[in-house]
Length: 193
Image (cartoon, rainbow, N blue to C red; front, side, top):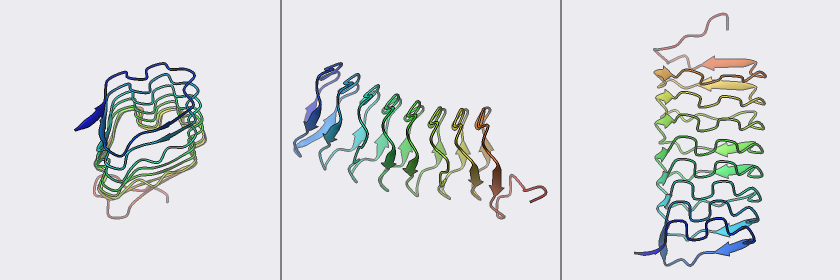
């Protein structure tokens, strides 16, 4: 496999654009971490994972097209990408690890894959512009702090398969007005609604 190594472009603070050859199948952890001027990147079409800290603190990155081949997004992958506003996670992706999108303060829209089982700890923590999100029916666990400090979150629907909502899951979501629970959920029920 052709790959880009660990921390390859770490804190290359003047790097603005990157196009990665389609022969690359693996990009190592923290490869673009701290590239604060990176505005655009074209990822290879055969990429299978977004490794830990890959785009950590890429504070100028406003858009990312994640290839359909990506099956796994590791911890802190996009943490601190403060301009990132719209993300579509490919349907092949089955795992998004903890804090993957923490502190993406401009994130207002994210499309999650239908096979996702867990919203991991802190996955959307401090995504202050996230006003709504569709949680896939496949999700069984909304982990600790998953949406903590999502101050624009106005409504949330708990799907039928959710059996656990962790501590602090919606902590400090001070604009959360409506929580609905799927009528087929055997673990949680709606009261007065």
